[in-house]
Image (cartoon, rainbow, N blue to C red):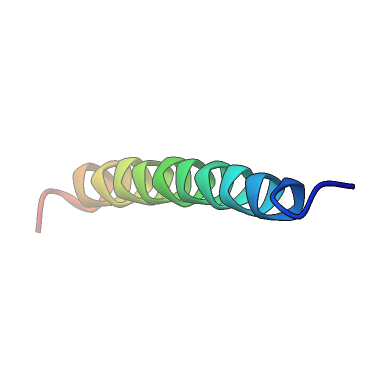
Length: 42
């Protein structure tokens, strides 16, 4: 096992996590938008 391989995996996981968080944020925003329109835009 190369000394750098663990770091490579870690940075790759962080990239996947940030993508996951981004998609979750987008999902929450779309949910909020749907709720706002359902409530009547208030």
